[in-house]
Length: 84
Image (cartoon, rainbow, N blue to C red; front, side, top):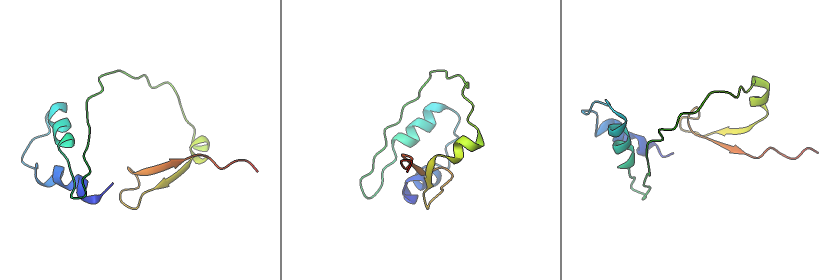
């Protein structure tokens, strides 16, 4: 994610109260960058049960590489290397 992508939402719309999903979705959907990135955003109103529990050991086997900018939010998940 480009750092400038999140900034317009925070800076240019700071006066708007994020009081509804609609406001948040409109802010995200109207985000663009100087390099031409556009964002498609819509609300998923489906309900998803939290059934599956993933252990720390299972998470440790994932091939996750955090991004340089906010790696806790932005990361790449790649296939696991083949057993060899």
